[in-house]
Image (cartoon, rainbow, N blue to C red; front, side, top):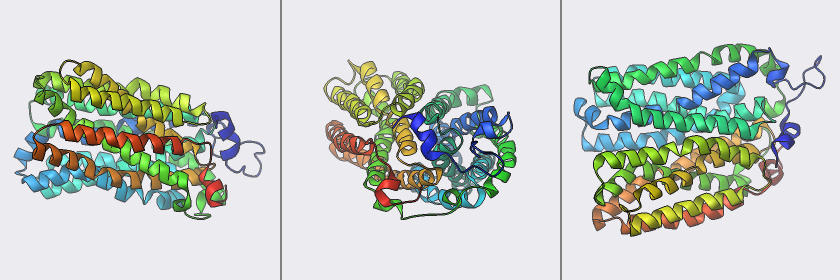
Length: 427
């Protein structure tokens, strides 16, 4: 389904007195609304991962400073996916009641508040609670950004999804690469290094304030399909399940890569510093491709071929890590970086597999919440296999094996159909 087709399928109802103009299109509102929305979307996306990757860069210092036990430290590393799953489920109800823009604004405020509070925590419990607050805001925004794109930019789903996917990848890489140098430049205190990222989160709240104010009149006139939970549940849709499982498997691969790739290289004889650079290369690959892939996917009726190609890149990367991890390290890092771009693809498909903003919010919440639940055991299982076998042969074989159902599910999710058609939901 092409982007231009989506404009007709998902155009919101027109309020009386404004014939032919969509109520939720930026063109129908103030002239500043479109540009401010774009800025808000980009800033929100930039803040969807620094709360996680900045802590990863300083985790040893934070663990020592807060006297965390090994159990608590393990819990904190598992909290992001759990929060994304649990809080993401609440997004549709909150969106229906307050509007998606208001919920994203509140989500960004929660991210900022958590990042402001977290560095001043004097114990592991308070630190965990502040982290959970930020992660709750991220979870809501994760689910609702595709809805914002579908609702306000129905004729540019691929382009806008690419823009915020690129910003998300950039924020992830930026926090991972600069947190330690920033901490050193600011005196070496890990608390200061974490606090820096609250500034970016506060900035992300600002553009959403006028958007929320401008969207209040339209919310009152929004169609029933947007305001109400119409029609059967998405759990009856095979496409929804394919998207959820595809989301879960790609998230598993991404978390394993972020958590274990440097160790794989180090065990192969690569220096610690080079292993860190190789991980950065893998993550940076997502910045340009996160913009290119959604635009390409939005112009295709069937996105399955893209899912298959990304999966093949991952298979070659894992095979290379098995056969020659050190000799071909740069090539394997690049290949896995391309493979991990399944994330912007699945986010784009969420916007394409529903006709209306109401359908997108339900599908996004279901696919992301279910997918993140699926991804939780992955890094733990890989770590356990590594510990018990003393090597990477079995863990790499498992990761390569998981790419096979991921490819199959991506092909199924990429078919040109919608959840409304499958479930008999009202548009």
